[in-house]
Image 1 (cartoon, helix red, strand yellow):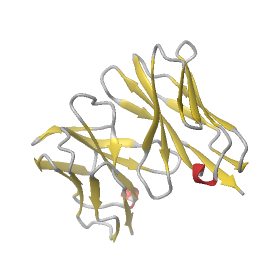
Image 2: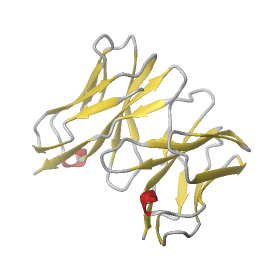
Image 3: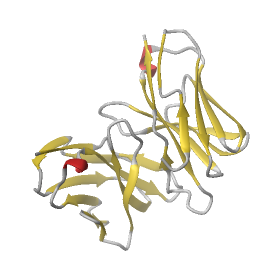
Length: 111
Length: 113
């Protein structure tokens, strides 16, 4: 069964600090991996997408990495801001367009 | 929210009553999806549609039905709501050219008492 595991489940960081979120997956055959940001009370919004051949992708202060060999991805948030407080969801797509969602990591940024 | 609206945004209902949630899009996208989101779980696919009157089941379809009579509208019906269906429901859409890029609506929070 295709699975996506995220860690940690939640974390608290001080404004201006960096943090890294992890995603491990067992989806096969792999097509691409996305990180979504979900603000409280809103739907998820795509941050980055990476295919098999890409190992890093940036979107402003967000940098995602992918190791397709070990089936691991990370999302690094640099110089966190209060607006980064949200849930971050790792989503892996298989060749048949079916998506597997992680349970998300809840990030709280404190002033 | 990419031209997607969901209604109602919040609903409280009693066990055994029928409930219909509506998803409306203005993007003319072919694919539409219904997900539920529960604490500790990732988004789980309930049903999806690949065209008008064309629908298929997702991984958690029991107790739910859907209908799509127009491109822009996708309805999710709980025939007889149960407390286990208390959840946040999200509609998503995607286009034919890039089926994997899904855009999500704002969600409907449903409480079944």
